[in-house]
Length: 400
Image 1: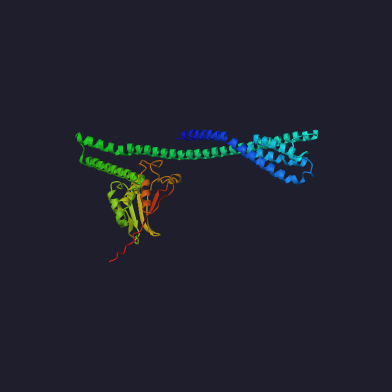
Image 2: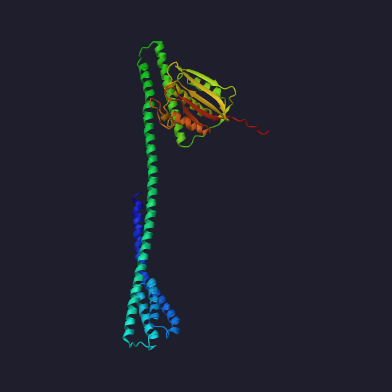
């Protein structure tokens, strides 16, 4: 694409040069005629103006003034028009202003020298004017070409900037694709391998005591639920990237939503203690139940992954400025400040994380789709605290 632009530009300039050459080949006769006619007109004006005073003035006065028509002719018509005008002016000078008037006879050597000098001066001045005019026109053409080149350069620079932006976008898409492949290959393969290994052993008739057998079956269930959450996150990310995330709002009780999510994740949370504190004055919220449940699921799973066995995961909910603020805190290693700025980006994992890097990005998109905000606090070594807000439900009064 970039290579095509300059080629077209040079072709356009070449075409313009051929067109200018054609114009120059057509215009000179017209220009010479216009210049010559202008010179003749000015010769007539000067002659008429000087006739009343020709007897009282010297020959030098009309000679000097009759140089002007040659200059004008040279300016408009070039050197040929200036020479012809100077010749006519010389004839007029001899016939009208040198005695005997009305004839071309030259009897005095001084008069002959004056005529020759006049002609030489007129032609020289006209030539200088014509050369200056040619230089001016050449400078104007160069200025036009420089302006055209400058505009073409700006166009090329804009095209390069656009290509750079497109390249960056493609690189980001490629990086996201690679991250997705890494996520799928690792995060989906690990639970599948566990399930496959256990089911193979059970199918082959491996002998396990009832306690071990139940533990293995629980492990299969845990890994199946983990797969379900990973697939749900992948589907949600595809909806977000396609711009198809549209919350279906309804009135939801915050305490009920938190309790239901915790009950569903009981296996994930079995090695930690969940402490829920919902303010007594916490109102109903206007949210998409399934989507906000997914946000809590991602935050609970993230907290359980980083909290040591026997640790506490705290969940709080309280009204705040027309919204309801929900916070999930853990007793894990915390998140470094430099990682907090990018932790909500897709496929962004913490330094010691084993997650897919999708959960927090999806949570951010869901919360923002509800008109809320999400953030993370806590320093390294102090545990992490994720806080998000959702809108309060306002009862609608329907007309009877």
